[in-house]
Amino acid sequence: MAPKKAAPVPARKETPSLPSDVEDLKAEIDRQIGSLVNQSNRGEIVTRMVSVVQERFSGPIAHPRHLRAYDDIVPGSAERIIRMAEKAQDHNAGMDTKIVDGQIDDQKRGMRFGLFALVLVLCLAAGFDYMDKPIMAGMFLSTAVLGAIPVFVFGRNGKN
Image (cartoon, rainbow, N blue to C red; front, top):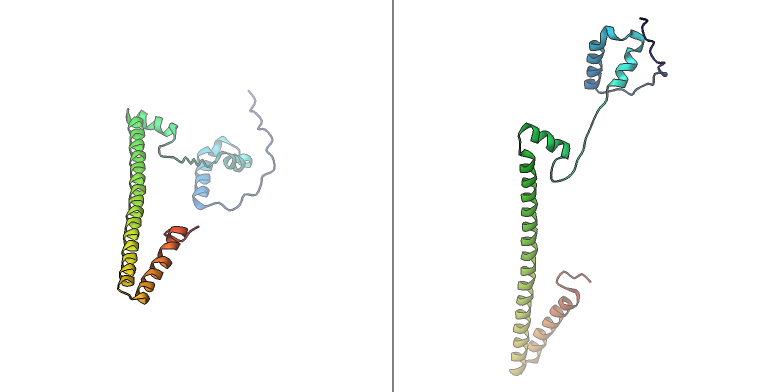
């Protein structure tokens, strides 16, 4: 039986310098295929056979293929991984709810305190007016007005 002729190989492209680990890998492949492939085609075949596979999967659980592999190694582990991700998601949602509820409570407490302070300052202004001290009454009243109106118009953070 006559040896098969190799398909024509297109002109070899110049490859940019590769990291040393890739060069080491190419050298190892070249050593392994040694006498199986003639010397003139060996470099092209090695270059074509070397490939880098990179997978990225973003999410709370592993890629389904990886889950299947985990389950093959330890039966039931895929379900445990999914349950763990569900628990983490429930925990994060609970923490977000607590944070938002805490912020709302803080805002309510601040508004109550602000209203109490405003009423107190207005009472002091009325008291000074009753004692016939209009300058002191005007100072307390102007402080209350200048401090309270912008809060009610623009909010506590001064945003429109």
